[in-house]
Length: 159
Image (cartoon, rainbow, N blue to C red; front, side, top):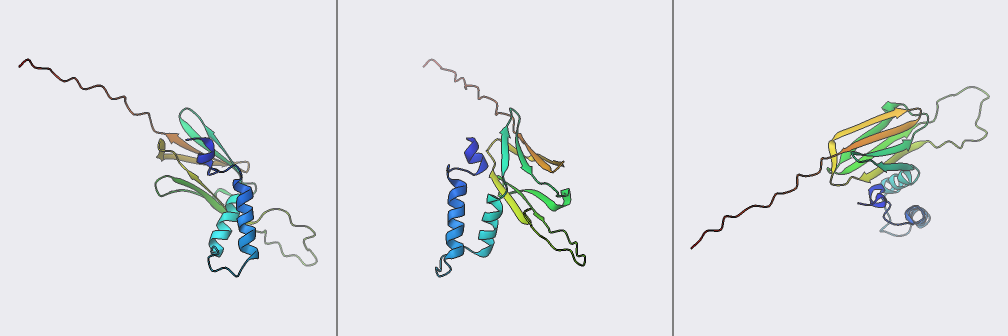
Protein backbone atom coordinates (compact mmCIF):
# COMPACT_ATOMS: atom_id res chain seq x y z
CA UNK A 1 0.00 0.00 0.00
CA UNK A 2 1.49 3.34 -0.96
CA UNK A 3 1.70 6.32 1.38
CA UNK A 4 -1.03 8.34 -0.39
CA UNK A 5 -3.53 5.53 0.12
CA UNK A 6 -2.44 5.18 3.73
CA UNK A 7 -3.00 8.90 4.32
CA UNK A 8 -6.35 8.87 2.50
CA UNK A 9 -4.98 11.09 -0.24
CA UNK A 10 -5.55 8.88 -3.27
CA UNK A 11 -5.89 11.94 -5.50
CA UNK A 12 -3.04 14.44 -5.82
CA UNK A 13 -5.66 17.17 -5.69
CA UNK A 14 -7.36 15.87 -2.54
CA UNK A 15 -7.42 19.11 -0.54
CA UNK A 16 -8.20 21.28 -3.58
CA UNK A 17 -11.12 19.05 -4.58
CA UNK A 18 -12.36 18.78 -1.00
CA UNK A 19 -12.41 22.57 -0.56
CA UNK A 20 -14.10 22.97 -3.97
CA UNK A 21 -16.83 20.46 -3.04
CA UNK A 22 -17.37 22.12 0.33
CA UNK A 23 -17.61 25.57 -1.23
CA UNK A 24 -20.16 24.30 -3.77
CA UNK A 25 -22.33 22.66 -1.10
CA UNK A 26 -22.13 25.70 1.16
CA UNK A 27 -23.00 28.17 -1.62
CA UNK A 28 -25.65 26.08 -3.40
CA UNK A 29 -28.45 25.29 -0.95
CA UNK A 30 -31.14 24.53 -3.57
CA UNK A 31 -30.05 20.96 -4.43
CA UNK A 32 -31.77 18.07 -2.66
CA UNK A 33 -28.66 15.88 -2.88
CA UNK A 34 -26.39 18.11 -0.82
CA UNK A 35 -24.39 16.53 2.00
CA UNK A 36 -25.56 16.80 5.58
CA UNK A 37 -24.14 19.49 7.84
CA UNK A 38 -22.38 16.76 9.84
CA UNK A 39 -20.66 15.49 6.70
CA UNK A 40 -19.55 19.01 5.77
CA UNK A 41 -18.28 19.70 9.30
CA UNK A 42 -16.35 16.41 9.36
CA UNK A 43 -14.87 17.01 5.91
CA UNK A 44 -13.69 20.48 6.92
CA UNK A 45 -12.23 19.10 10.13
CA UNK A 46 -10.30 16.50 8.14
CA UNK A 47 -8.99 19.05 5.63
CA UNK A 48 -7.82 21.38 8.41
CA UNK A 49 -5.90 18.71 10.34
CA UNK A 50 -2.58 18.01 8.61
CA UNK A 51 -0.65 14.88 9.51
CA UNK A 52 2.61 13.14 8.69
CA UNK A 53 2.73 9.36 8.28
CA UNK A 54 5.95 7.38 8.48
CA UNK A 55 6.49 3.70 7.80
CA UNK A 56 9.18 1.93 9.78
CA UNK A 57 10.20 -1.71 9.40
CA UNK A 58 8.05 -2.72 12.40
CA UNK A 59 5.41 0.03 12.63
CA UNK A 60 3.45 2.92 11.15
CA UNK A 61 3.69 6.28 12.92
CA UNK A 62 1.11 9.07 12.56
CA UNK A 63 2.20 12.55 13.69
CA UNK A 64 -0.36 15.32 14.18
CA UNK A 65 0.23 18.83 15.57
CA UNK A 66 -2.19 19.59 18.39
CA UNK A 67 -0.92 22.73 20.12
CA UNK A 68 -2.67 23.70 23.31
CA UNK A 69 -4.67 20.47 23.66
CA UNK A 70 -4.65 18.22 26.69
CA UNK A 71 -4.63 14.46 26.25
CA UNK A 72 -8.24 14.36 27.50
CA UNK A 73 -9.30 16.51 24.52
CA UNK A 74 -7.95 13.96 22.01
CA UNK A 75 -9.60 10.67 21.04
CA UNK A 76 -7.80 7.87 19.15
CA UNK A 77 -9.83 4.86 18.06
CA UNK A 78 -10.12 2.16 15.40
CA UNK A 79 -13.37 1.82 13.43
CA UNK A 80 -14.44 -0.96 11.08
CA UNK A 81 -11.35 -3.03 12.04
CA UNK A 82 -8.97 -0.99 9.85
CA UNK A 83 -9.72 2.75 10.08
CA UNK A 84 -7.65 4.78 12.54
CA UNK A 85 -9.60 7.84 13.69
CA UNK A 86 -7.93 10.74 15.50
CA UNK A 87 -10.41 13.36 16.71
CA UNK A 88 -11.06 15.96 19.34
CA UNK A 89 -12.06 19.53 19.94
CA UNK A 90 -10.25 22.76 20.69
CA UNK A 91 -12.48 25.13 22.63
CA UNK A 92 -12.25 28.90 22.94
CA UNK A 93 -10.80 30.04 26.21
CA UNK A 94 -13.62 31.24 28.41
CA UNK A 95 -12.05 34.49 29.54
CA UNK A 96 -14.74 37.09 30.08
CA UNK A 97 -13.31 40.25 31.56
CA UNK A 98 -14.99 43.60 31.42
CA UNK A 99 -13.50 45.84 28.78
CA UNK A 100 -11.58 43.00 27.05
CA UNK A 101 -12.42 42.04 23.50
CA UNK A 102 -10.72 40.15 20.71
CA UNK A 103 -8.98 42.39 18.19
CA UNK A 104 -7.96 39.42 16.04
CA UNK A 105 -8.78 35.74 16.40
CA UNK A 106 -6.73 33.46 14.10
CA UNK A 107 -6.14 30.31 16.11
CA UNK A 108 -8.37 27.50 14.97
CA UNK A 109 -11.10 26.36 17.34
CA UNK A 110 -13.68 23.64 16.95
CA UNK A 111 -13.64 19.97 16.10
CA UNK A 112 -10.86 18.23 14.24
CA UNK A 113 -10.61 14.74 12.83
CA UNK A 114 -8.44 12.57 10.61
CA UNK A 115 -9.16 9.08 9.33
CA UNK A 116 -6.53 6.71 7.99
CA UNK A 117 -7.11 3.35 6.31
CA UNK A 118 -4.72 0.95 7.96
CA UNK A 119 -2.96 -1.66 5.82
CA UNK A 120 -3.63 -5.37 6.29
CA UNK A 121 -0.41 -5.87 8.24
CA UNK A 122 -1.32 -3.29 10.92
CA UNK A 123 -1.78 -4.82 14.37
CA UNK A 124 -4.82 -3.01 15.77
CA UNK A 125 -4.21 -4.66 19.15
CA UNK A 126 -0.85 -2.86 19.44
CA UNK A 127 -1.56 0.86 19.12
CA UNK A 128 -0.08 3.53 21.38
CA UNK A 129 -0.61 7.29 21.47
CA UNK A 130 1.55 9.93 23.16
CA UNK A 131 0.98 13.69 23.16
CA UNK A 132 4.05 15.72 24.04
CA UNK A 133 4.69 19.44 23.51
CA UNK A 134 1.57 19.77 21.34
CA UNK A 135 2.46 16.89 19.01
CA UNK A 136 0.42 13.69 19.00
CA UNK A 137 2.31 10.57 17.94
CA UNK A 138 0.26 7.43 17.28
CA UNK A 139 2.24 4.25 16.69
CA UNK A 140 0.63 1.20 15.09
CA UNK A 141 2.80 -1.89 15.20
CA UNK A 142 2.95 -4.20 12.20
CA UNK A 143 1.98 -7.84 12.33
CA UNK A 144 4.90 -10.21 11.80
CA UNK A 145 5.15 -11.45 8.22
CA UNK A 146 3.46 -14.81 7.68
CA UNK A 147 5.64 -17.88 7.72
CA UNK A 148 6.46 -18.99 4.19
CA UNK A 149 4.51 -22.08 3.28
CA UNK A 150 6.64 -25.13 2.81
CA UNK A 151 5.84 -27.23 -0.21
CA UNK A 152 3.91 -30.36 0.55
CA UNK A 153 5.79 -33.46 -0.49
CA UNK A 154 3.63 -36.12 -2.03
CA UNK A 155 4.88 -39.69 -2.03
CA UNK A 156 4.80 -41.27 -5.48
CA UNK A 157 3.90 -44.91 -5.36
CA UNK A 158 4.82 -47.52 -7.90
CA UNK A 159 1.80 -49.24 -9.44
